[in-house]
Length: 79
Image 1: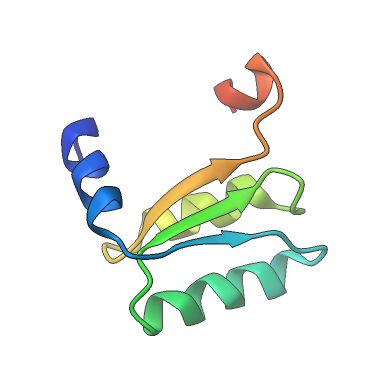
Image 2 (image 1 turned 90 degrees about the vertical axis):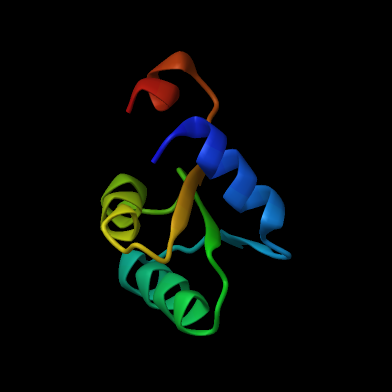
């Protein structure tokens, strides 16, 4: 997906869900439920355990527009 298309898709989304959880399984279940309910833009905070794995899982779902939140350092951005 190109950056232009991603930005266009996010702008067209009426909701951006922010997932912040202490449990990776719960966080992924919430994200999947949101997708099933029609929410496409999903931010997972990097403070969520397993956030990168959750984002990778969401990236494999063609319905999802995943993004990382609570990016506090250049290392966070690289990951």
